[in-house]
Length: 208
Image (tube, rainbow, N blue to C red; front, side, top):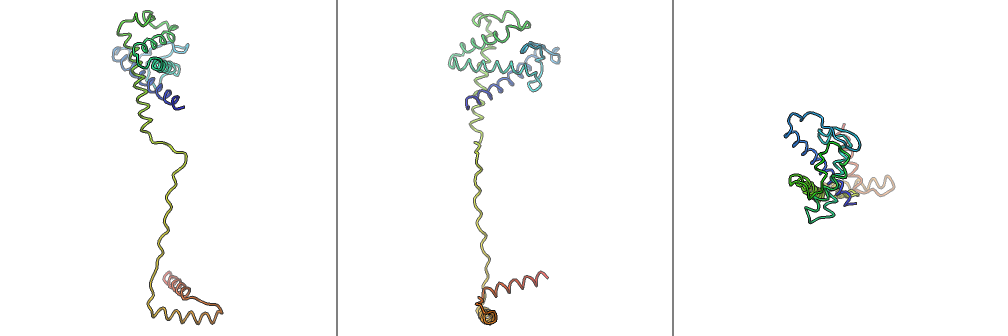
């Protein structure tokens, strides 16, 4: 699953950037055609490839992703041999484009028979995929790990109870009052009850 994630992310990274880079280069070299449609056969349909990646026809995007996967396979087959990987990329390009009449026939040669500037295009595919994989893995390494369970919040400490101190004279008066109340009610009344009742009464008076 991890390898599949890396593959798909690298494919998207490679496909979108390589297409947009090709388009910038094409428009710079062909300023008169910069805004004109450039129709090419993609997936059995003629589509305009002179558009940014976000607006590119799905069939053209699929073709770019196929090229990316071929470059990925080239690295898997030849991880330490750049020329062998580039040769595989060229072989896959021939397989994908053999039905496109717009492609120059001289490109449908074995890799060894290509001029150096054409070989460089295949080498660039290998290098770009290597860079895409490195970028995806680096991004994945620094991304914060997601956890399925929310971290438990630290329990709040109960608020400290408010307190007040009574002087000795007040305590004696409360004790006497508690004794009388106990006799009247027939149950033992603690001085704390009287103190609390007094505080509540004071608050009621204050609110009024």
